[in-house]
Length: 470
Image (cartoon, rainbow, N blue to C red):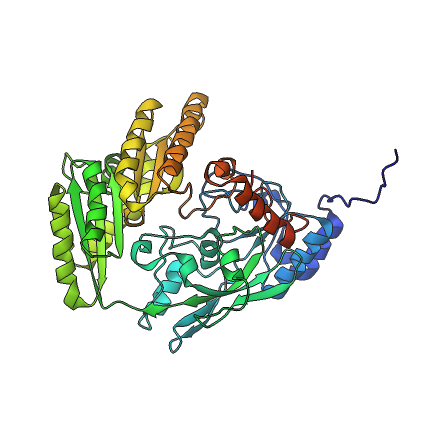
């Protein structure tokens, strides 16, 4: 039987001619090919590293479009990249190819105080954007722990959340529209500057959280809200992690929705205490960090209800930050939880799970059981107000036995999460790290539908291949 030699067009390896095409788009200074340069774009916060063939730094949407068209013509992988701070391997060039580093698309184009919207490019740093809108009395609530360096485009691509999600929601709740370069190089605009829009499929929501597998975001239209008048920051110390976890639901049941409701367990507190020299009771088993905001007239009443719920559930201490400096120091401890672990541990594996809020006490119990079963140290902290826990496993990544036990523990953690009707990723995405576990969460039909969408929009599978689907 004879097979036609022209029935399938195979991908080609990047070569000098293709590099010249890319150089013609972005210029010599914005095309990186030396090994020293490529290494900088080969990894993210997971520590996994895969070398790209080239890195391009486009200046505008038109250049992104031309780059993608070249990549699609030659079937070369394209990996959009922001700050590279993700925890799931989403921006790692696992199949080599062209990294589109969007650092030059970093402008705040417009802040509209009449319609409460802003238009920004994807590499605007989240914390910088928050500072700018707050100068105008406005508020952009999403606040991932990485807000000092992560970008709004990256936050949108991964569906990032943050501590304030319990009251205000996550990044996708503030994205009204997008400018996106499709996998074939067309430029589309999804959504718009109006809150209401019922014209066909919601392509904005489809793109948010798609981790660069369906297109490259080059502009975002963001919804803003008025800046709250005041806020209070509180801590409650518990001897028992389960008591702290149970308090979370009781606070919500008291008809108070805190801005943030953070949980730090005993092992997390031990690292934070050692790193930041925090004063904590010897018997501290867990801490809740609670913040409320709104009109000053109602804050005192809300504080009283929160204090009552904490003391009813066995809190040993309940304190209110005296001023902004004290509150900032408490948040420094919370945001420094992960770095503090790395200071005292040989290494760690971090997982991002979410369960219904009332299942947090049960999840905390199961984490203790899993740690004992596999003879591991597990520390958890995170956004207890919305059920989102960051589970950290102490591990020496150079020790094969350590890694084997840790990987078995991860399976048990995800199994428990799904059994409690939760999700194996709350805000970090799937990337490549969690792709092998996706079938624990989704049915074959659900995964099949996602793959069909991917195939329809990206027929040559050039956009961030190797991510989400194992």
